[in-house]
Image (cartoon, rainbow, N blue to C red; front, top):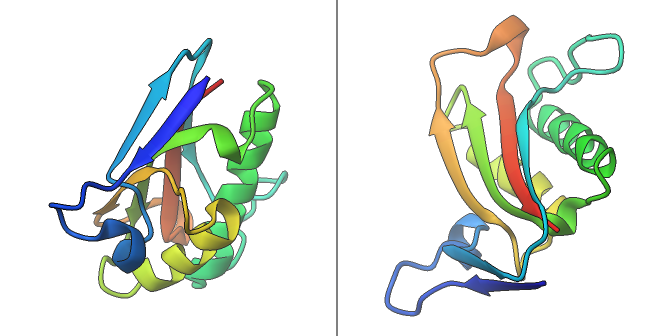
Length: 133
């Protein structure tokens, strides 16, 4: 399988300014994996990181890793993410910081971040993903 990360030079610079790739093209994939929105919850369904966007983002990515591992994939297989946050002004910096820890800064997945009016039980973030193997 070949995964190509492309940030066209004649568009805005999403890689260095926002931490995502404009286009991810996949050739020769065998399996498409669609992961439902991952929440910042522990195994007992308790919120992790009350009021802390970085802790909640980390918890979402840890749950994403576990979900991918359950089907024989990992974060390197993620090609697309949608991130829902409750504050598009305050949260992106923390989300981008943690995303870079998990996905690096050279070839992050294609991504969209959307503000929603609220999430369940004081959650600040929810993350869904698509992966290929």
